[in-house]
Amino acid sequence: MKRIFKVIILLILLIPIKTYALTGSVNLECTPEKISPNNNVTCKITGQATDGEVTGLSMDLRLSENISLVSFEASDDWQGDASENKIGLYTSSNKKDNFNIGTLVIKVKDSTTTTTEVVSLVNVIFANESFEEVSLSSATKSINITSSNNFLSSLSTNIEQINFDKNRLEYNIEVDADTIIVSATAEDKNAKVTGNVGTIKLSYGKNILKINVTNENNETRVYTINVTRKDYRSTNNFLAALTIEKVSLPFRENIFIYNVSVENDIEQVKVSAALQDSKSRFVNNYGPRTVSLKEGTNEVLIKIEAENGGVQTYKINIVRKETTDNKKDDTSLKNIIIDNKILDAKKEENKYTIPYDTDKIDIKVTPSSNKSKVEIIGNDNLQVGENIITIKVTAEDGTTKEYKIIVTKKNKGESLDDNNYLKKLEIENYDISFNKDTLNYTIKIGSESSLNINCILSSDKATYVIEGNNNLKNNSVVKIIVTAENNETRTYNIHIEKQTNYLMIVIIVETLLIIAILSYMMLKKKRDNNEEE
Image (cartoon, rainbow, N blue to C red; front, side, top):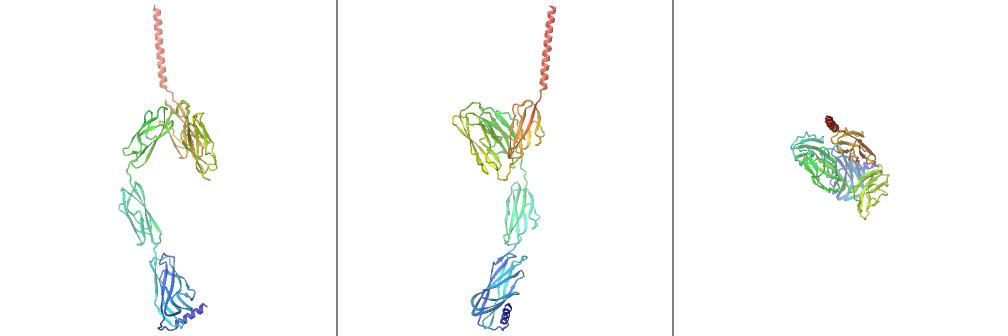
């Protein structure tokens, strides 16, 4: 059948062309008119006949170098085909006025770098039912090819030279300025440059500048300039002095935690501090001040910010001794024990972490007064995430107080941290050569009754308590108990040896010897006098 069609078309084309009243035109409409390489364009071919009817037509398809024919499909009532870029069609239903001819699909090659390609229909001939032909004007359509170029052609700053290579995406420079001007030019005029261009304000240290180049296909290439601004600012955030009114504090600039106690009748203390560096400052609300003390432990923080912004914190734990009076309104707690772990009974809010398979925890609470009553609320069906368990204490006179335990339940498969090591253990005036795996240390002390101990944990999820650090005697043991998030404990022991004051012994012995000699001499003299008489 195809061969018959071709013969018919050939016969039509072989008939001599002569002037005839039939006129018309062909038209190309292509979508999209703008396309990226390696994509297809669909062109609709239509015709128009005036002063007659069309029963057959032929035309040649001409494509520019970087596009190729994918397919041609004639409209429903046309017969024939397109081969070797030649279209030949005929129909049994004569066409007049405006009519559809077919649909052309072409593809833009992936390697094209041109901006415009052309589709043309040339040698266009219409024929009527009498095989009379008329030559028509060509139809041409331009297709705009979008650029995939998202390179920069230049990249520079007003301060430091950049050895620019369009294929290199990252650069590092160092400057001594608070601003920099970045200039960037796209290699393709239709690409857009955005990001950190123009005048950029620089922070001290590393500044990461991103320059984005976006092509017509909305593909972006990012160039990065790491600009390090030199920082000559002071890093000193140490104290020169730290004192507490009515308290002896053995201050050292590199000791950051202090533990002191005061009597119950001291309700407030004045904390004074002096800076080492005049360019540093106290962080707002964390400078020298008067602190009101509650019974139990009071945490006082002194924070110093260096000129370069670095912050150092000194912590003072001030324990105000509790009154021994038996108050009817006593709602305090003596201890809180969860799964054999001792929590801080003086805090109104403690935090605790449990594994996924735990729905309830073992809580033991002892009130300070045996006449107070304790009620535990919320310790059932603990859910993943944060749970609040309330300990309600009712005193003898009906006064109530609530303590909260924030219990965090881990997700399924999420384990608890088992790190219960100390990272650092320092004892003021003593070198113990600390090693995290060594649990026992022995030190010889003088007349002091307690030690100034500084502990730093290996894990921020662990906690520690110090026991036995008071009224130190020979063979006393100071225990530092570190509890991991999974409640496993590790105890570091400091064994105390009290040094014998040999000088005092010598003085006492010498004094006794002198007394004995004098007594002997006096007795001897008295005896001699008696003999003379």
